[in-house]
Image: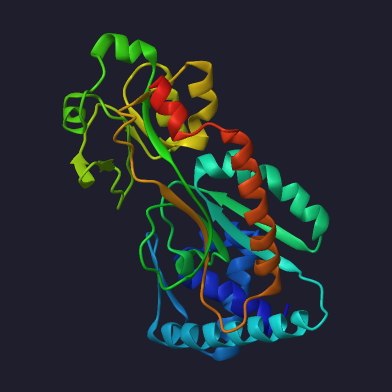
Length: 313
């Protein structure tokens, strides 16, 4: 048991605010986590956390020590990156997050191939449609799919992709097709909702510029694939990246709505925390996954375009 290992455990406990959450993240038992924190407190001669049955909070000494430990770990990461950049082999744990649909269809199938090429990199993939705090969660690389704004993180763009609003023929037969974007207010829209979500507002491309609409519906979920399943069952309109529903459109299980006023496209990108020197494990992962994403999504679309959608919508 080294001091550095204890410091890494302490930092994750401080960031996640929980011994159990840090244990899961580090893949060690809660007993080991507790033992390492106690050993660090004994070594320093101070209490690092105030513990109650409901919460864990860093003491004043713990806050000071946490900031210093972050500087140490960042310096160590940069030193390791510098060594690897002049001939070392990329290695180590790599924490990655991605949206659920993209992760299931594109990212997770590509991980075994990446691991075969870089066997000393351990990919820890977390899928969620929630927008995670990358620093708080200790994420090395995050896939984002959306209308991306300014960010303090380094961003590598994969590509821009079309989105569509679509519904099952059953829903259209029952409720009819909206003739204009404004008529979406009269329809059941299936919404992606979680704390901080803005998906209850849809932005479409009109002849005079963007159209921002407030929409509503009887169903919402924090998993985009659930929304697709509801749309397939005829429960409402869903807004999705074209590549996620291309197969359903070809099969006739879904039909495009308002093809002449499509949603704004989304950007697929990889974000990672800014470092003066990017860790080789992150760089090789990003290089590999960008090519895999472009290849896999191109195969999903397989020539399906907005022109074809206008003809069939």
